[in-house]
Image 1 (cartoon, rainbow, N blue to C red):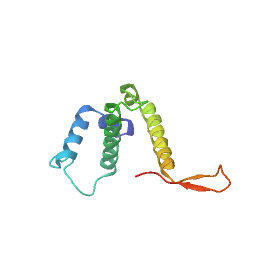
Image 2: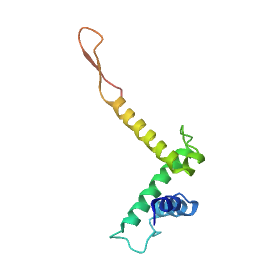
Image 3: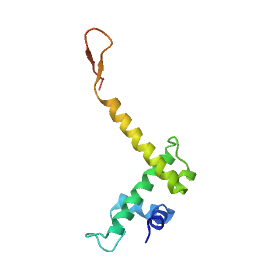
Image 4: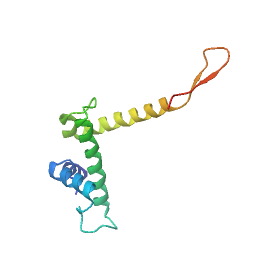
Length: 112
């Protein structure tokens, strides 16, 4: 099975519905085998989770995501890169900030 077919299957409404139910209940099995997953099964689970996150972003009205983005793999990949860089920027903002504008440097502490 090629990657495009695997991605299309993972973003289908049926697969996403089964995946959500399996995650919530833990009673639904996606595969007959629970252990020693094949590479195809691992990739399928990966894309199920990716598209699950994308649909969550869509429901939450996050910027730059739409049904059109999800339909096209290249646009999806671009959004994922943008999303990843946004996460990196948030991490950088959470680091301690040092004020070097004055003569004596001081550390700015964030409130909890």
